[in-house]
Image 1 (cartoon, one colour):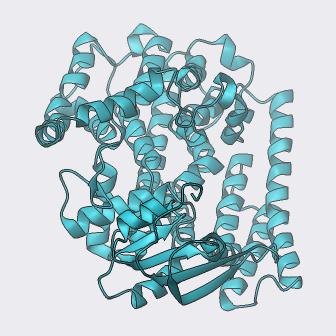
Image 2: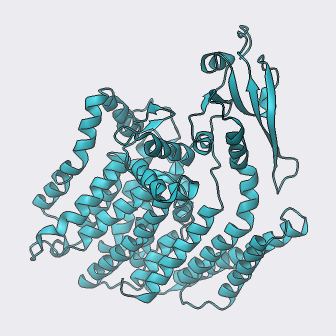
Image 3: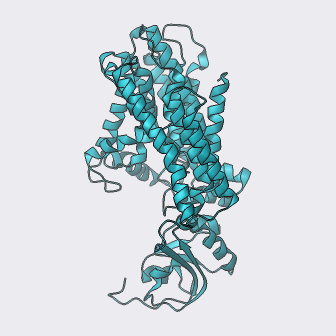
Length: 531
């Protein structure tokens, strides 16, 4: 990493991700808000060994993500930005690992007499320019950490000299640690994708360029035991049923045809591969003709096949295969007819990206949906910068232009469009007001609204209730109720609304959310026909 331009790209990536993270609160009812609440409880209740969610043991995933989020909040305070910081840093580390992996692969191609027609830096830019990579790097989820661990495992092995040549004793230490950390992020799934990559490289490279012998494979697997076993054994000693939970999460969702969570058809990932644009544009016939150049395609194909056979499917699972898609840039052939069309297509996409962002700002500002402010001014400045970068880019290559414009648009959106969206999508402001009112120690319940962000912002467990029976169980002597106003109709509970706030969609004026905080008495018994 002695090249100055590499560090400038890394700085631009971190700046763009940080800007978005500072202007976006939790939106979804589940997802990262749930992970964030687990991390907050780890920090505030001291549940480091067995993380909890709303005070109950939460063992569906190993604890590394929660430890990282809790450690970050211990340093910077409890906030969405702090709990997302590990994912942002993981994205930066993943990109640095991608540079190392691409350079090692380029050396291998040169050694077998088929030097790449593109630079390793272009392959790293292909990863940076994937919208899936940038979007997932903004979430306090397991995928960014999983990607960084897997990438460093593969890059660490590729940094070794070919087998039979002298190597220092700690050579396998980096991939062993990376695989161990990946296991502590998501269990056995932390091994699958990097091991698929290593198998692709070991089978695609000629014998004289392969890194791993039988003893090396054994060390890769056994060397992780001192790092991953202690936590599992300590948890099993306290919660013998944890093994069944782990098998259900890590094995049943892959092998059990009857597993119903996120169940999708076998072809679900085929249209989802569009998330790898523009890297997939570098897939050309030469990738099929040469064995060494088929390595990225083999890695990508094996990963998609594994995910397609699994019972549970989600689009963001593809993130761990993003490095394979990015390496297609190095596997692509010399300039030709297809490369000219490819560059034109990516140029059109870049032009659309550079033009649509300021056009959207102009339309929304003209209609009064965005109120002029210093933040919006910053968004306009960055929109014009995106246009300037497209018109006279300071870097060569279609991928570099795409990445530069994409990160500039991301920065501009962080200061303009994102705050307007956040004001409607996130009830954070309402929760903070509710926290200042519900201070009498009585229990607080989410009525028909299972947003874990309520617990995160109120700094206390806010349990969900969907039926009157739930209310009777959670509020036997009354308490506080958080809800959207429309869900309170015909609720047979005496209540006094003490706070009401409306949120309006800045892009669709007829879309509104009305949040209320109510002080409620003991619920009446539910009638048989009332939910």
